Amino acid sequence: MAKSGTNRPAFTLVELLLATLIGTLVILVALAAFRSVIVSRQAVQNHTEVIANGRIAMRQIREDLSNFYRSPVPGVMRLVGEQHFMASQSADTLRFYAVSDRMLPERDEQGDVYEVEYGIYTDEKTQTRYLGRRCAMVKDPLQGNAKGILSALALDIQELKFEYYDSREWKPQWEKAGLVPQWVRVSMTFRHPQQTDRQARFSQVISLEPLPVLFSQEG
Image (cartoon, rainbow, N blue to C red; front, side, top):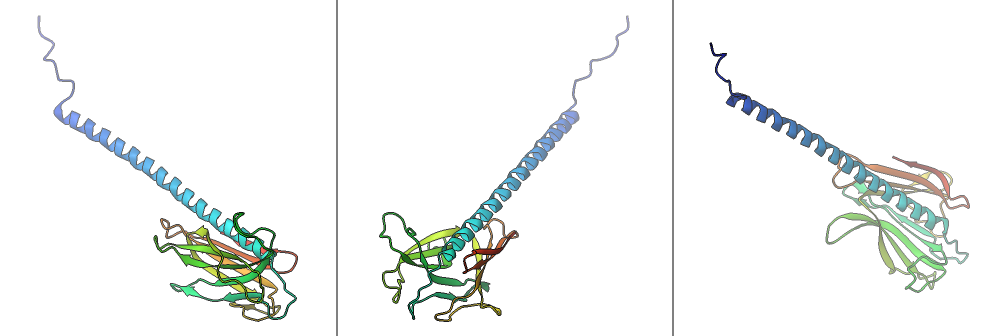
């Protein structure tokens, strides 16, 4: 009786190497896709945090300006806006008096009139910039208070710009003693340090009249 033939090995060495290579490629593609999803998700999360920082900052500035203190006493500082630059970008400061029954932590002495100042500050340890808010109780409005508590209101800020409308035109700074602008336009730009190509911009026109917000834009 004739034999049907010799038994052939299930896989040759070449076939085994090809199968291993294909399996490795499939795993690498899957890992790359998974990493891409993780990176995209992290990018969305970072941008969401930046937007949240900007909204919180704008809300606080709007609230403080809505409590703007209009002193009837001549010579009392009303509002001072100075134009500054940091690395060719706007880094303005805004200082004014505000009235509130509680603007400082409960452990600190409270008052009725406070000096509030906004500006961009640099953390000495990390060398990162943040939007700072300085708040100090004022006992004598004629003298003010250059001290107070400085708190980091928002991180990752790149630009801070204040503009002032005097019923005729917008001005980049405000140093008119005894006069108050009709509107203050606040513009801020935020950028996460890991996303240099993506920014979040906020702009809002705030009235110093009873109606606090006239126009708001972000994006």
